[in-house]
Amino acid sequence: MRLSHYFIPTLKETPAEAQIASHRLMLRAGMIHQETSGIYTWLPMGLRVLEKIEKIICEEQDRIGCHRVLMPTIQPAELWKKSGRYEAYGKEMLRLTDRHEREMLYGPTNEEVITDVIAQFVKSYRALPLVLYQIQWKFRDEIRPRFGVMRGREFLMKDGYSFDLNVEAATETYKKIYESYLRTFRRMGLTAIPVRADTGAIGGNLSHEFQIVAPTGESTIFYDGKFDSLSAEEMTFDVASNLYAAADEMHKEDDCPISGSDLKTARGIEIGHIFYFGTKYSEPLGAKVTTPDGKSIPLEMGSYGIGVSRLVGAIIEASHDDKGIIWPEAVAPYKVGLINLKSGDAKADTLAEGLYTQMQNHGHEVLYDDRDERAGTKFADMDLIGLPWQVVVGNKTIESGTVEVKNRKTGDKQEIALDQVLKLLK
Image 1 (cartoon, helix red, strand yellow):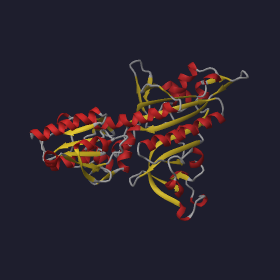
Image 2 (tube, one colour):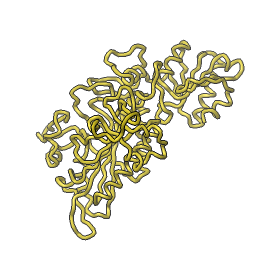
Image 3 (cartoon, helix red, strand yellow):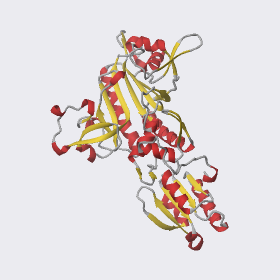
Image 4 (cartoon, helix red, strand yellow):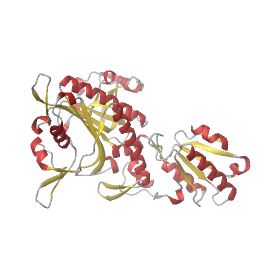
């Protein structure tokens, strides 16, 4: 993509309403635009990151045999009245009526809808186990939206739902999804700590939040220091669930199994939440199956969420500096920022255009800064956007056929020959 033709309305000044780093940087980098309190338009650069995150989530869900669906944003109140949550959910639910005076709502979550689908179509134990998931927009009317996409009213969420015949099978499904979430977040360049958590309004008796450590985290987490030394391969359900980690509302100082310097305390950002809640929804909504011995029993259920749009902000909170965003390569909107410092110079343009074409032909996503701007502006914008690699075409390229390559994360720079750029990026 050529930056001269790209819609990316970057800002030099930080908007007054932006209180945390991710909100400031997303606005300044032209990723989002606020339409009203807690509701944003996702601009091209921000949408690319959302799509990268979505792709990783789907690949890891599909890898363990989950099935993707798409449920409606507008749901009938009748289902929520059957489950008993319509009145209990509170003012966060946006309620409305259609032209026929039927009570409707904008879905804050989808347990009722997916359970109704299963009640209609799944009748035998032979269809189990079954996990369905979607990535869909949700709305919760937060009393005080803040921190940009970290606590907005409209948000993109991955929500999955499991259906099993008995408690033992449901627990195995829970473990499998728990581990898939750890893999998912690792692929995004994040180390997530699974902490024991309150189930809240959604109900249930087994719950974990996946938290990443960041100074601007909204909650306090307490965890065993061994988490910091676990490798990716060691972070399995059996290992992680036997180490102490708890959100603040679940931590009991007088009854903590970890003491002294082994207990770590940090601010955390919740990026995922999983629940096992048994027959809380299947029983009132009639999701039952016939067992091998001919009995009809309600299904055992679990719910599994990831905040997709929230993850964009969380990644930035965990990975930025005073110059801008530092994207992990897996979720970066583009892999390479190609900067032509001598736009308009025939030789520089030819060399930069050739490199741009080569990188694209080899499958690298490139944002090419071909604008007629000062070098300082180009460097500042590229650091703000935070692409993993910067390749600079300038005087040395014309004179000696070398380019400067900068790693955005480490800040390391090196001069290499033009014909070595593709090898380095690979």
